[in-house]
Image 1 (cartoon, rainbow, N blue to C red):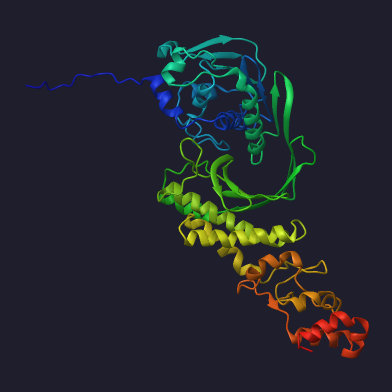
Image 2: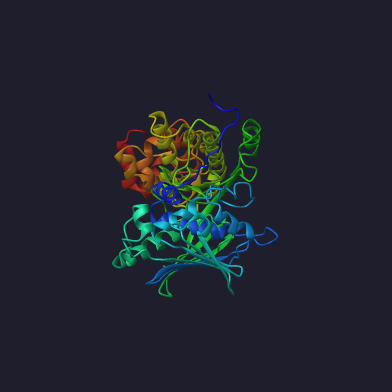
Length: 472
């Protein structure tokens, strides 16, 4: 016979087992670097204002030491103490949400140390819960993470987490990975402006976000000229409002702004950023930053059928509108070939959606751009001008190509030869570049006030080519 009142049994978490399961998704040096950058980029002062502008990764022989010029608040220490609390989920102006990213440090260290705001912590994950964090009061400057290398393969932490020891001979390759991660992470940061990588105190790479004026961002990586990024901004506030009304679980801090970044030097495949880069690549020559919902490991952007996927699709559509609106700014900024490679990539991406090789939201890039293309001066001519598609003429036959100099002298705006590889695209209905025809030449002759005989005397070889074309 059962009693009327239940008995109670405690339920505990195997802390090291929890860390081991989460670390499976948080592997990779870039993940570790992004977590520490994110921590610094999120730092606020007591009044809630941005407080950090610099972060330094120093790869020393005994430890990875990471410093930033912000100061930990009480709530920041509390979030480290309460793993997976999601404490930053509703804090405006922060990127973090899940509260588990710091776990990534255990792939290189057994006992992480944090010093900030007059306190020093050493976290001992293999200790009992009530003794897991050791704290000292000490003088501190800014914030310092010291992550001693886990060189001992037989440590209790290494064994429980099922991780290999750190090989001292691989610290150089580790440095290269850190440099790569820091360089790409700088693009969309909110407050950090100076990112450095050192080896035993000697500067290896410095990345500076130098200026952001007129939607143009310059990033100096120490390798010569700054890398210039053209930024196109958009928003989806109306859609965001409807999504929040339908799905109250969308955090109030989540912003509806988006940014498309196009590098002057060109890009093969872009990435989606949730401030920091994800591993979700796109077949488009630019990066997109938005307050996307990422997977819990922050490596991928979600395109599921739930509210997170709907929010992310709305952000992609907003990015497509921002790019389409900004297309008219690109002539003169980009080369003609780069511009039309970009436009072609929009069409190609749309076709991949039709073939179900890309999420449906990405079709919006072509859908938004196509109606504008015929009315913008996006065609580069052989005489060095940018004109609207209806003004330009494509040369089709060999005879026409040979006669190009005389056609240009007559004032006919022929498409520049470097765009010939986009012949089919330029002829598309949405763009509408016409082939050269007899009427074009007749009008040009009349405008020039020249008769056929006069023209033959001035440029006999070129015009005889046209004679062979049987159009005069």
